[in-house]
Image 1: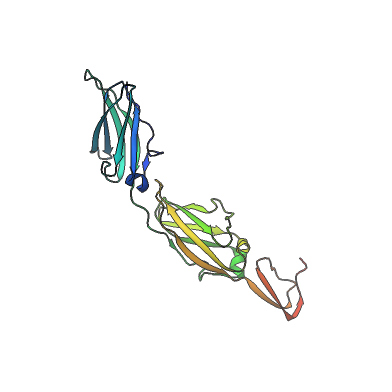
Image 2: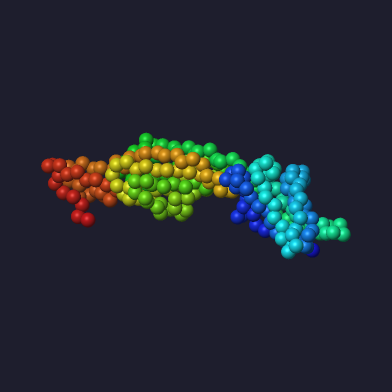
Length: 239
């Protein structure tokens, strides 16, 4: 019968941290069988072949350091067992095993609300925080000043599109959660195997202050974060 091949590197995907440390391939087979482990790429090239013998209980394991692993690519990892009589088993395989030892570049963050200042109109309408990154990566954003979690689908995590763009939606009046003044955002991206980029930060300002004078009774002040009244004010909205 075919030997077994356990899950390795927690998810059968090898990221930079795992690549640079040590991973173990392991499983079980016939007692004292010789195991042949291969990494075969999409072009059917066998890029790594190594051997190990099962112990008296039928367990086997083999350590892979970064020198033992083939180069970054997508592989089929296969294990076959050969017994003392030279009978060769069928293969046990795992497909779509990715080795990716490259950490993504830091994201690029575009200007927020055109000029990094959110005014009353932009707060009322809502705005986006956007930029570019690695296609398929997950972008995570945090708001250091307020600790806010965005209300839109996906919250503070979004996927980079195939055109390398990403965006977060800040809904109508949602910037009220940031209060008046500076808000610091921190953004990273994590690729499909778990490599995370360095942090990029950006400061933007919520400047939704209204200096009110005259008759304000017909105005919607719900997007105003700070209201300053002067001596000429005659009326405010009733609610």
